[in-house]
Length: 381
Ligand SMILES: Nc1ncnc2c1ncn2[C@@H]1O[C@H](COP(=O)(O)OP(=O)(O)OP(=O)(O)O)[C@@H](O)[C@H]1O
Ligand SMILES: [Mg+2]
Image: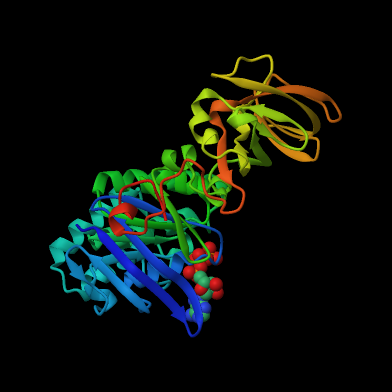
């Protein structure tokens, strides 16, 4: 087993720069998720680690070997793709055995590994079937099984669940996460789905336009997003953003239509950024029904309800405060009707403040691009 380290990695296709300058360390045994919108470069990063794509600059290390010039088969990795890429004319057993046979593993060893993987994945009753006789979820399991029998140092997954229906996805997501905990194989998992990223990753690396924006544990990204982009990307429904200025000697966040008092916990930040134009971020779950008590300091606002979506465990309310649209996740027993004006409470200690120009968190980590800083957990890069 091995960690994976990328230092100064760049990728250009002709003149197009796809990965700008990537430093990322995936620790041994870690489950790292790469997430970001379509086209941000996730697959390209994975393919460079796999050796399916050359790097234009920088180094990739797997374990203690720089692998830049090693062909894929010598990198000790196994990759699972979105398209399962099973051999249609072979049975499940033959698909699982294939990679071991071409490596000339002993017969008994092949049998042991295939049976073990089939058992782990609950596909032992399907071994004599052909892929066309399987459901999507079962095919996906076989594809994962093929990676497991190889006993690689690193698993690479590229959106492996996107061909499954919503229910199967949730089930396979949990199974892959459990499997990784059991096998402890270093894993890099690509998805564009932030819920998948948050639920599966021990750490999550958020990409945008070929740039790594932030890497941290799911809760670090949720609690202290380093930029407006990460704040809006992580969390459902997404965070609300309102433009404001810091006034009143740091005591008030003034928006064109309402003022929010600054809680004691944020005064150190606002006091040092007087007059600054900011973006105030508030998560839908930090806006409460006025009949329920908020945690810590709260401020009341009047919201004109546009629609209310009951989800059973909660109701999502879309409303307006002046020109600003706000989304709140409320207790399901509160059922506002469209057109109604409701009083809601904002939990002030949960506000996030970003510089309006740079879009960086006001109380974020100082900008530091050295690998040591990048690797120390929740760092903004
Ligand atoms: N062979 C190539 N030649 C030129 N451009 C490419 C090539 N492969 C990828 N790109 C470009 O590189 C960028 C990143 O692509 P990549 O496939 O890594 O994105 P992604 O984050 O995996 O997106 P998705 O979520 O849609 O899979 C895209 O703009 C894509 O058009
Ligand atoms: Mg991709």
